Image 1: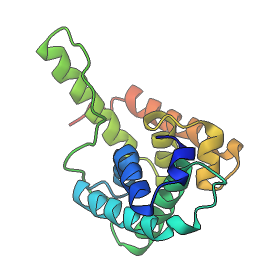
Image 2: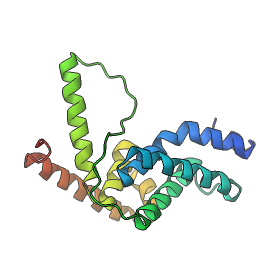
Image 3: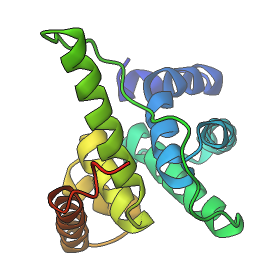
Length: 180
């Protein structure tokens, strides 16, 4: 269902569409902020409640996806500011569903472990670097889209991406990523 078709639907139908198409995205973004799956799930529910209550105010100046990203990022930032958590260790890492072809079980396990270690390294970045990295690489958003969502200039996004990549590279080259 495209954006034009959604305009003719009821708020309940629009909400169902948004939850089905963007629910995983909302959960991943929330997880990048709080680093705990259960809390991220609770936040996701709150975001969709807020979205439902705000559907009448949607003005079609952006896509529903961009609008939902903006609500998600703003809600997560407010949550992090209001909640006193620091240095939480994630119990699991959220991965996109995928079914890649691996040569063997061993290579599959090694690849999963490498991805887990890399994602944990990403989670150790500052929120500003982490959110840009997640939106760019995990959500496949463009620099202008991220700038619009976060309310900053595209040059700021480029700088944050550069710093995030540099920090990750230093961690990998220094062996930090592969330490236990």
